[in-house]
Amino acid sequence: MTKRTAKAQDLVDQLSCEEFRKAVEDIIRRFQEELIHERKELLEQQKVFDVRFAQKVYAAGTSQVSLLMLAMETKSENLVCGKPVQVVDESPKVQVHILNSLM
Image 1 (cartoon, one colour):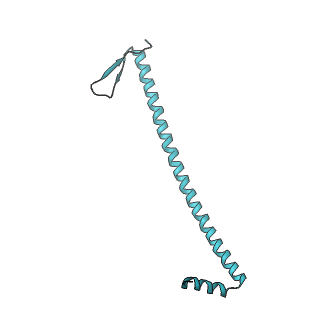
Image 2 (cartoon, rainbow, N blue to C red):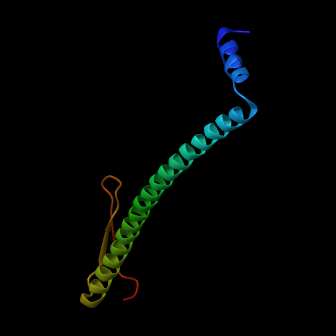
Image 3 (cartoon, rainbow, N blue to C red):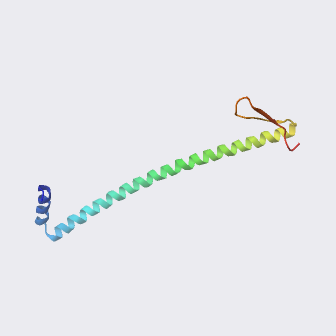
């Protein structure tokens, strides 16, 4: 038995059963309070993360919808004007002109 274990055993031997039970209950209560406190902090952090994630998803979705609406608006303006829609390919030195298929 190590000295530390012997000291712990001495403390247990000095306490009555009731005192030992109260000490253990106190330790358990403190441990539970700490866990509850940490859990609350984790829940708060999770809420902040959820809000930020929702904001990013909303912003990305709004951006995509805006781009689609702009593309539709441009296409409809070109239909009214009778102009061909020009699509430029990102690959080097390639340009493709597409006439509006609805005309």
